[in-house]
Amino acid sequence: MLVAPSILSADFGNLARDVEAICEAGCDLVHVDVMDGHFVPNLTIGPVVVEAVAKVATKPLDIHLMVENNTFFVDLFASLKPEFISFHIEEEKHPHRLIQKIRSLGIRPAITLNPHTPPEAVEFLLADVDMVLLMSVNPGFGGQKFIGNVLQRAKRLKKLIEKYNPDCLIEVDGGVNDQNIHELKEAGVNVVVAGSYVFGNKEGYKHSIDSLKI
Image (cartoon, rainbow, N blue to C red; front, side, top):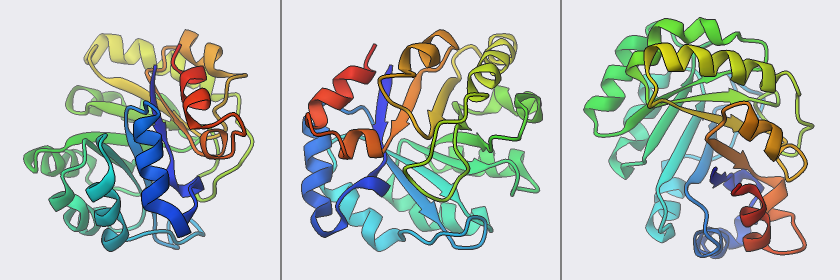
């Protein structure tokens, strides 16, 4: 299991320290939640802050766009060369075009589904993406309770991936912890995003990250 701590739950007064710490603790990706206050009711960070994160991170960035006007935001972050940029299928009118654009920039394209969106909604895009992100909370805020239907959605998605693109990863974001990680693994999930569980764990970042690497 790959672990991508979400810096949305980090201490923004000591953001460089926290990013360096999760990288040293063995995370695989640094998950960056970009929210515009329109697609979701929260407003988070822009390219100036993410550029600062990129400078101190020793692990690749995983940028999750929760925005309107995806193309505009892809252009904003492309120069930082993240490993992944994911966008929401619910917001994008021309997903295939955007996927091609992201890949042309040397970035691995990923697509995100809200908790109510069936995996079949991206069936004919799977051959063109490197990862599908399934939300297991409603996007917009950290610290929410895990929505259990993501397990069934992951299993359905896994069958589609095996048919169209066996190399495509499944990522899950929201409410992930050591209590549900085994079920996620069994459902075919490859990457987990964890914010509150990593940054709020009294045992330390390494302990929380290691507990998810099963």
